[in-house]
Length: 397
Image (tube, rainbow, N blue to C red):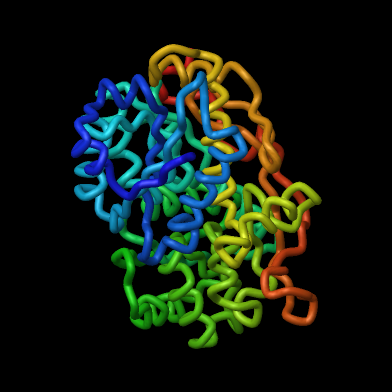
């Protein structure tokens, strides 16, 4: 019977140190936001997806039981690193999944490399994780800023919108997305007429929106995500900015659309790695997922399932004690294939897959509270992510 524990302290109380834990058990830690503004995207749903991945794999690998542990990093890098140290040094954790924010993922990259553990990033979006800060111990499943900063803005630029104003969350994710949107806008003959940065988890965006309104821009782009995106986009609608400006939210997602409701979100373009109502397989998974969570999985929660499944296949193939670098090498050697995700892991650790392009439905088009998207196209894997050419990743030959 599989055991799911919040922390590894109980195991230590029984006298099990990291050596015996690693020898007898393959342990995966879900390090996530359990109750904050990003918990709807990953959070408890990511833990449930991880449990389902382990159950579907059979609960064991190479004769060893597989355990899921989880903890709340509270969106704080120092808290996340403290948890990882305990997990790695005394808890026998072999791999960490989710991580949620770019700052936490970048911090986790270093300690995981030192301890030869595996990072399965399914939450953070900075491209540095497979470019400047790539690691032989890390793979990146999540959507990233290259998609948000290039592909979605291009769809808007094709409509002739020339003056852009950016509202940016003030940390690594937002900074990276701001740079990419600016690059894309300027490369297509348009102009960024202004930008403002706001703190993570801000509540009042009125001063930022007033600056945008007075800028003369015909596009208002939100270089933020999760709760920040929902709150700022909602206030922009309340201010009536959608009457004079095209609202663009490149990092919008299923959970944010649910939070906003179709009245506010209708008509917006959204890129997704997967969608619960895409086909019979995704619907079947969603039915099982909803038995516990009461709602379908987000793209990030599906990615957690996919990354763990592929990781366990690699652990099985490598055999012996779990060697982080050897497992990641194996993950790059074989195709990814599960109920939702198909693709390959590139030498820089970037998982390549076709990205769905969707449009949020009007309320009159929706037949279910979770029926929110029309699938309007896809971005081929070869185009969706930053190319290898010119990559600063030292793993790229």
